[in-house]
Amino acid sequence: MNYKLTKDVIHLLEKFDSENKNNLYTADIEGFKSWISDNHSATTSDNTIYWDGKENGRSAESAISTLLVHLNRYAKTYSKSAIFDSEFSTQEEFIYLINLKSFGEMSKTELIKRNVQEKPVGILTINRLINQKWVLQKDSDIDKRTKIISITQKGLDVLEKQMNNIRKATRIVSGNLTNSEKNELIRLLNKLDHFHSEIFGRNIDTKNLIETVYSEYSFNNN
Image 1 (cartoon, rainbow, N blue to C red):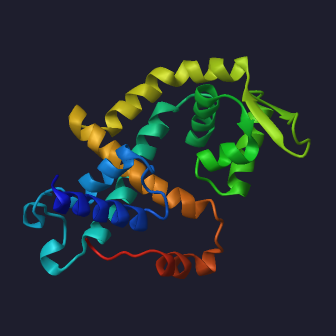
Image 2 (cartoon, rainbow, N blue to C red):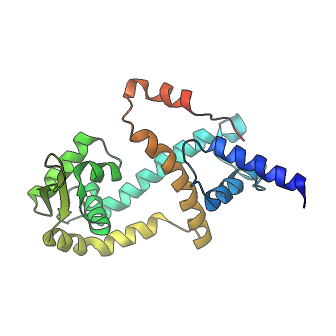
Image 3 (cartoon, rainbow, N blue to C red):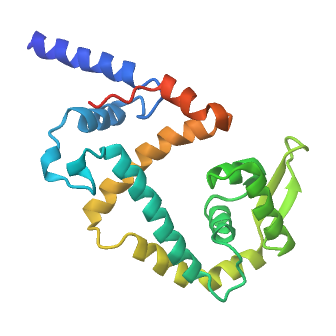
């Protein structure tokens, strides 16, 4: 038996457990393999990747943040086109309906969190859907203080009217990426989403958000 290899694997497992305190990876062999791939596999040389301002010292983090903002704005533009001249007022309305159709009824809080919105904004969106009779609100059987939201047949019908345009918009957003590139992008975005979702769910006060998060996580480059 190669004891040195065994020791190296055990050391890697210990490091994986130590660095995975925030559960960015599942605590199983698949999570371990993903962590290995992300942190210990050969990666593309930094010298082969270019972003605006790199030659002037602009950081990769700055480029990522800007590109995510740009992509969000592009996606919103296509979404507006997808619901133009329809019964929808905002893209949030059809996104809420799509979530209810896909995942079934859920509490108001869960629906708002799933759409990563602040509660006041989410409540306004849900109220508009209720007024349009696209969703139904009822008391939870478990806790009467909790309101459960479900999509109505009218909601399904109005959503179906726009689904062709919505599908076209989502297809455009993925642009000219190949299937393998789409899968890799999904993997990376899922990782980022998992990281930020945990923070978002804590409802940290805006005043203290950056300092709280920065003090709790290590952002040193690997």
